[in-house]
Length: 196
View 1 (cartoon, rainbow, N blue to C red):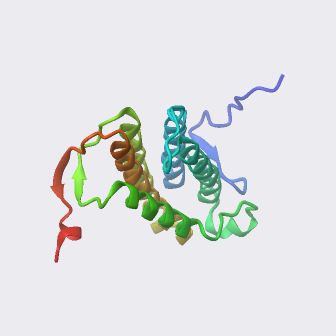
View 2: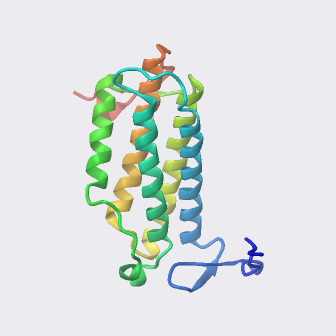
């Protein structure tokens, strides 16, 4: 019988790509833990996309997009798990247009939801609330990636992608509220977006 447990982590270390072992609280492992949590949160969001389909903003489109993001997240985690000196040996590659595609999705969703000029209280519909949680986890993952980046360079595309994803989840939450005709609970205006 193949067992899932190996007992190799019982002493507080874990293996990374390339074969070396690091402490379980190493910045690389902390970053990947948050990325893994984000990926799980996206699984929760996708599990909620089983309702009626509406023109222009279908659950199927969102499910396909989030599925693609989850696949990209697995590649991101593999690359983050690989020290920069070993990264060229990692066979996993991210799409070249990763950041541009994310920005295009943000722009398209912003067209549907209207301009977002305010901080919002997380909540609203269950789906919007879960998307806001994904945004918050994404921001934490981004902070962990920058902490790792100070010790060992993280690919620029990954840093940019994770930054854009948090914006994407925010806009998706707003779209969900607009689609359900649920009012946004605004806190304050974004000062930097409202300057003339």
